[in-house]
Image (cartoon, rainbow, N blue to C red; front, side):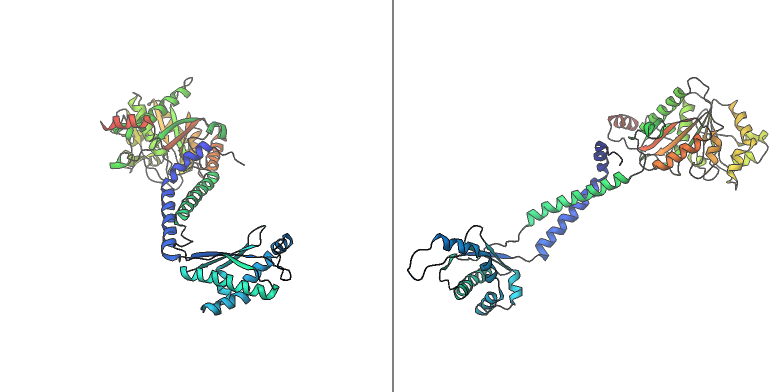
Length: 451
């Protein structure tokens, strides 16, 4: 059984605040509607009778043996009090429009422990009738006991009175129970999802779990795509996302301190995890650091770097690999960022894996290494495809972009294994879309960016 991190679970519950509110409102609303509109008020009235045996021959007082006998027969007396014999007589005498079976549903007869006293309780929709029935049962019961056991000492200790308020008015208690059930229900559902959740989170010990270091974390930025701003490093250099990218750039430089880092492949386990966003902004960051940078869209299936940099895609890598590589200069595009050039993916070919594995592609990359300080390759997702696995053997380092709380551990593990099989140098995991809005770090840079 996987160990549950309690602290992480309570942090996870924050995502269910709206669920708690909705569940509580629905539960309380439902119980109030039931108690006020649907549930009919019931009135309860009670009386007690005591049974003792008097010696009719000598007129002496009741002795201890008589009391013990009455106590032992208390359960029998209770059954008699609720029998059809008694109830039918009560119905007849009070002229009630119900059967003995219907009447018995609202009647409770209980002997008081260690006594010869019997408690008679009646619940009815009519307050006056509940008291009348209770007193009627006590009267008829005394008469029937006298006939059956020849007892003439059955006394009614208390007379049932008309209740002034319903006995089933439990609205306050029901509201508390509804809130408790709603909270427990949502918490149970959240716990089940948390326990069964196979997604990788930035709070996980990835190095221990998968043997992969965390190269960086990119904060969730809801305004990232507003007005087409998918290059915050270029257009909002003081934003928290820009700082995250700069930290990633620094971490990469430290990992390659003993060798010349030239080519970096950015990939992911699945689509829509943000690899193109990370690769584009990482390229901008290197260019801002004074490096001569080239970014190549190697996703020949669904490449989108041309959209991020707002340029045409009529001629790109796929077209270059089908052309004479001496014409490479005509496929390199200048971007609006100083020191940053771009090769788009080009026409989507029917055989992307074959093109990327070709000798021509290897020669293109080898030639470009001599003209640029950093070359970043935006590859296709690894899941089910050979494209990025092929490219991983041609580059110095590989970054795997993982969307926080979205990528499954099994998919990430499969991606790691696929890259390790070709001896790829995996620099680490980049967590994308991490929610750090509650941190002071976010607010400092976020506010600074607005000034």
